[in-house]
Length: 339
Ligand code: P6P
Image (cartoon, rainbow, N blue to C red; front, side):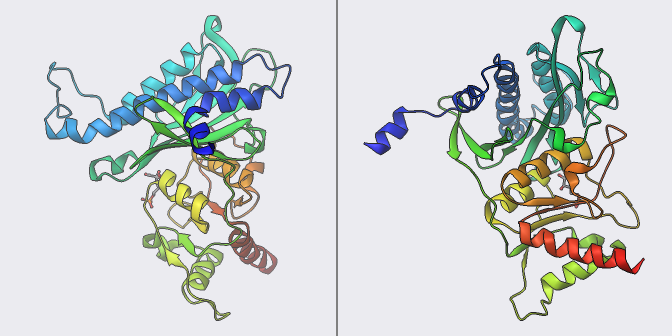
């Protein structure tokens, strides 16, 4: 029976990636090993995040825990777990984390060919109120086999081999693309395995939702203001879009990917480059959107064409359903013609 086959034919994320990688005869399993270590990090964070509330309740996560040790902030702890997992994989040479000012250059004895950029716990300010948060990551291959340098991670997003996020919410969902579409996996805690639950995710061509922090409206530029106005007061007689804004990028992007619509973090007078970071927020989410049939735009260009010059550089971002992003691109193009 199909249902039984599904139950006994467990498509775990490891098996899924092994299947994908087997198409490349030259692959030696390095990517699969790297991914397994990222998955290990996600499992750890999922468990820690779910306990955080309880730990706080029973005083574990106060200033000190029952062992009298200084309780680490969850994002610091998550960062340490990911750095250690990635280094111990023996497949990485450079790591860039939102939590670390400088890039980590892996010791030559443990070095591999991959560069991983990640935000170990994005949106962590939302933990205390139980809002979903997440890990975001992107993977580059080092540019050439010389001594690794920052140039190996200052590559445009279109050079990424893979990108994904893990959302810690009502369930723990890992969404991944290795360049051949987007697939979603849900952690089965009884197995400790991520099981394929959302095969071949495609974002709706057009959506009914816009997602932006309206509190910044005073500082928006013309095209963004015009676009949001169009969402609320459509001139073509169509119904207004709904506003959904969680304030946690992984949650807002995950909803956009599954339901369609557009997520915006525009530039504004206070932050001319917007707020979100290029390497480990904008690029991975833009990579996923394009792989799912959507698109991602910075206000000036295709997001994945951007060439970063600093590892913590920011960029404005408009991403989501293909047609919705087209609409805002048209407004920026019209603005450009005026100048
Ligand atoms: P604002 C969370 O702090 C974060 O980095 C993203 O996860 C989220 O999309 C954004 O900032 C929210 O920013 O300015 O709307 O609170």
